[in-house]
Image (cartoon, rainbow, N blue to C red; front, side, top):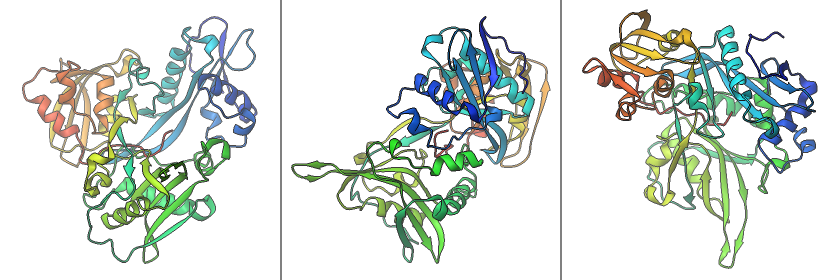
Amino acid sequence: MTFPDVPLPAGYRFRPLTDDDHRARLELDFWAFPSSVEVDDALQHPSPLDWERTVGIEADGHEGLAGLHSSYEFAEFPVPGGALPTAGLTWVGVHPQHRRRGLLNAMIDLHLARCVERGEPLSALFAAEAAIYGRFGYGLATNDLRMTVPRGAALRPVAGADGLTVRIERASREQHGALVDQVHRAAGAAPTGVLGLNRPGWATRETEGLQANYWSDPAAYRGGRESRRIVVVERDGEPRAYATFRRKLDWEPAGPTGTVSVGEAVALDPGAARVLWGTLLDLDLMSNVAPFVLPVDDVLMQLLVNPRAAVPRTTDNVWVRIVDVAAALAGRQYAADVDVTLAVTDARLPQNAGTYRLRATAFGQSTVERTDGPGDLSLDVRELGAAYLGGRSLAAMATAGFVTERTPGALARASAAFGWPVAPVCSWIF
């Protein structure tokens, strides 16, 4: 494997990694992200990584790896009204002995250069620390919803909830893998069937490595909770919703205070969603239900009679880095007619910098071409990435001075066009 010419500090070198480096990769990962799990236990958990996309850094006089990064190949990463090839940057880590020497900068430069080589117009990631990736041009494009809902919380009645059946079982890939993949993909394509629009950011587990890693359930990673369970809601034998969950039972003097930790909850219609959440909120010996990652517009917030009791909070979800501005802008749909020129700066990928004319019809075709002039709006690639999936407003960023309007009215028109009726989110952390 040959790499693009990206400089490293003296004494360091990139090298491709293979399956033979599985232990070394885990050793480095546990140095970068401390864990109570032992490496020998972690080796029993299938690696999700594609070794062709995984690169280590070696250092003179250092046994093991000094740094590491990888990416997932998302051939069909959902963007508003479409899908684009996207590199899911992951497993980025530097050994504490080698911090503050420029290794992260070099790894990001290599990653972006390889995205260009592979023709991936987008890179996306989940950030371990929110302050890290903005300086590399990644913009916070999605938030997700997390909360704790009291057991027995009242839900509004929903038409279509009658006649559905529920199965509660131990989760396994053999029994549930195809079902989960089917429902998950359908939910990203048209979340409720009401709008018929896709959910941007809703990445599927496209590779065998990701599937095997997701379904593996070693005890070392359960945090004292039970093995993975699943609720399946069906209508006439057809799956319409599922949720994976684990319970942990605690006892207080007044009685049991268990917690249901929901890993992923997905429903294809309102009735199925009502039955799914009604089931999760009525498990014996439990006192609360804690969904892990939900869209900020999730149906649960509409169903709860008293949403205050859930104490919802939002946190950052997917960050997006635009690698090819023209391909990215042309590869999505827009929620309103628009004809606007965008002056984009990009210090890390100078070939991206320039002025682009975007013309699009609402939920229809779009065209992008380079042009001259200062642009109707000026912004950095970081802000363009933040707005790209339709979950963050260009107008809101302008209030902080990160987007500048040069042509009156352009900001309002572009903000309406870049928005999307379905909130972007990824339901699992990659």
